[in-house]
Length: 194
Image (cartoon, rainbow, N blue to C red; front, top):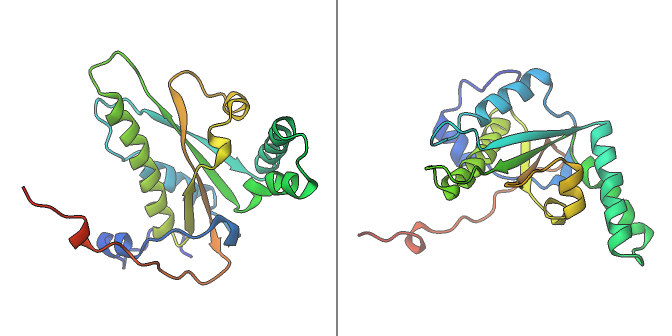
């Protein structure tokens, strides 16, 4: 791991080597304060028509991960009264799988000239920038949402307002296992010419 961006790697080699690592197979260390600052600054370099910053961040570290796990277990207990202890344990530990989780909140402004779809895409670009920045710093990251991104009580407890939704929870850490690349789709199946 490096404390600064890997100057020997070209931007293209970073893009071509980036891959997700399972949140279940992460360990510490995670980014320190300076690295986190770099990752978030890179995130804000995403395309943003109208300079709206139609996104914001929620950080989950340490005790915050445990508090989120307690909230998730409470939601499951309320929604599934017969949920077993194993299921509740899984929820209590969900946000403990990695040393850092960044919640990216998409926040759409309505009744303005900038289309809502472009604002949503901007939040997606923010998530991608986080993945690439984490990779450039030598970490592994995983962008997922799971049920908790959509649960009304979780949304309320996270302070989501009207027009806001979770674009993703991005888990960042050190891979506990060797990462293997997965097959990528062939361009011949994705490309047409007009």
